[in-house]
Image (tube, rainbow, N blue to C red; front, side, top):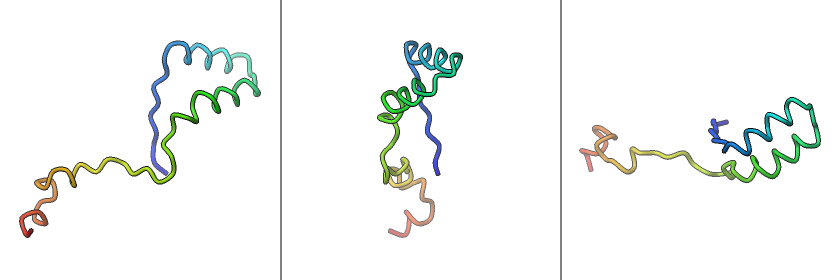
Length: 65
């Protein structure tokens, strides 16, 4: 499984901190479903492969073409 990096705005960060401090299970689930889940990559999303954009990164394979 790949890594995902999310950046939270100040409002989301404050809400997340409040949920964690209060230990609200329902609030945590709602936060994940409404704020985090929509921002996660969908199944089948491939990471960026810059080697297909720049043939010089392929090395000898690019020279044979």
